[in-house]
Image (cartoon, rainbow, N blue to C red):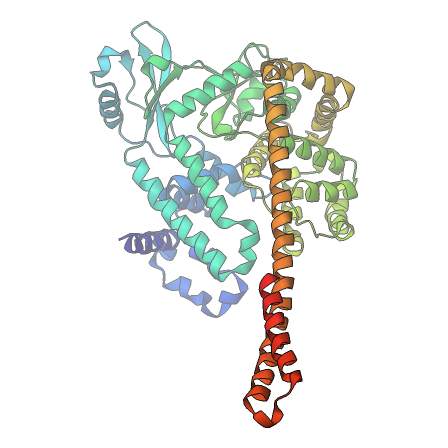
Length: 546
């Protein structure tokens, strides 16, 4: 049954590409030049040729393809340095303008979740959606207490749609690994598994509520970021209720300038928030596209961000944090040997990689980029160029870093939209330097000792017993080793004696036979025959004794 579902989905994707004339993108590849004329037989080519622009056709196709493709479009919308301006601008409409589903269906879903009339929870519920995204949509409401809130409701049948597309992606990933060997170093099945894990988390709104609460605690009373409060009493797995916030959408640059917001500081704070989440908290909002970020009207010279939509979060281990910080600083300092050494030490490269070769490849990628002014350098372009070297060195893309890379690209895109002169490197380098100094050195050592003292004090009473157990086990292992050695020597001796015994048996049998022949033949009888036979008997007895 799944096989037919996959075929149907592939046919649907191809139909959408043809419908919006995106098949011309495929036919534009050089190896399709002999059949490029086929696009003129597509009736949609003539119907939509002048109705929609290229960018509009791409955006409409992505909306039609479903939530997974919309997510990809949201990421691409921030990459104005990688996409033509018209396409990047059009894709921003995917942030919160996906066509909504009817409000009365949202009301029905909420009542089923509460098992009660909607009027028993809200004094007012606006059936017109405030925003509509690929997974859910948001409605304004007022609680019976009078508090203004927003209500997030999952799209109908979204679980079935997600599972269908994930099944197709898994099939394509398996096919890629089987038939395209070059794809294996990118671990497509692991990447699809990571996407599946992320989307499944997004489908549980209680998990999103927990993420929001954690992020709110991390930035409580912070001038950098404000996180709305969750209404836990009225939240369910498919319905999320939180405090309603007022702010200017971060992608509305004209409104921000009109409000007198300090754009330079706002752009720099986006970078500061990212690095604070990654290196201070090891817990970061991993879906910070412009549709999920607002700016507070208060304190225009010291602007504060407001974040929403916490379905996707990420975290790094302490080891990943350190390697990432050291890698970035090494890039800033153009210490390419250090970058190569860190890639191998962190397991991102095979251990048999030659450092000098990888160092040379990195230098060839980075030097032309660093020749430009720092404000013109795009970390996204640098990553893109670095991954082009992956084919030569079999770089292992770490699944835990995928969300981090995507988030950094989003943040960089937002920052450059706000303030094109933003110097990402200048803003980030001091932060990384301070973090590394905090992690290394004498102070860091004593800090870690102080943090571990409660754990050590708890385990200290158990230490004598543990030492006794270790010593007892060591003694048993020594005794067992000695016993095995004795058995080995005994077996070796038995093997040697067995060889001797066999040899003597052979001699004894031979002597007995010779003696018997001599005794049996009267002419040959002599006293020597008795000695021969007796010697054979004696040899047999000695062999038995041995």
